[in-house]
Length: 329
Image 1 (spheres, rainbow, N blue to C red):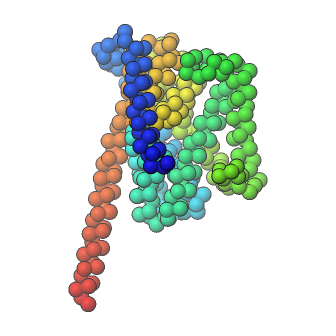
Image 2 (spheres, rainbow, N blue to C red):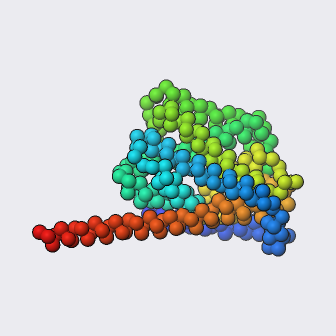
């Protein structure tokens, strides 16, 4: 069954990309590439600088995910520089390739096994990083639903119709915040692991839990800020609206298994922001991909090449020493 799923998810992702592009082409048939390029040229330098700064801050928050997981494991001998490079490479590759849990696990295994971590420790690290991200999504989604339930009306056709009922949206938001509160309480009280059939939830130490909440919140806020800064200022709906749409689009992109969420991410934004001119919106989303996905992806390939070259050089030196030792015998 696992082998079938390994082939099925890429197919699902490609189908999602094709279907999303078809829907996008239908939605955006009135604009041309020249319109989008002109809209890019109209984006102010300070907007690009702010978006670039938010990108750097977002990846810094992602590096904190790994640091928090290592803190939970009691691992202290790995430097911040190595952690930052490992985390940056992991997310830069997985954001573009898709199947982030799988590709992230592979990159982290190559990196952290070179620093003495076992396969079981790396599995815990990957799981905790994934859970930290989900914790931030649940927390911020809960806050959006509580304080701005009417923003969901923008997602008509994307979310079920009943989600547009404000009291119901607020009730769902309250449930989500309650789940986060229960997790925090379980950590503060040192409760035993929560088991639901095969699912097992270990409560980290309070110092780890509080860091999880801070890191995941900052990560999502900074990443949403990239799109916020790139939108046309005279038609910008405000940060809270951008955050709500970003959470919906980013979640839809992850669920779709589309490589880099290609097409799916843009489709949700186009559907949810009819008040932003299509050419300007698409220009902002293209530049978001350049800043948050493509440029980091290019740098990550360099990091991987240097790392693997260093590992190969070490292996060859070790082999040479071994052969020299045998000849000496």
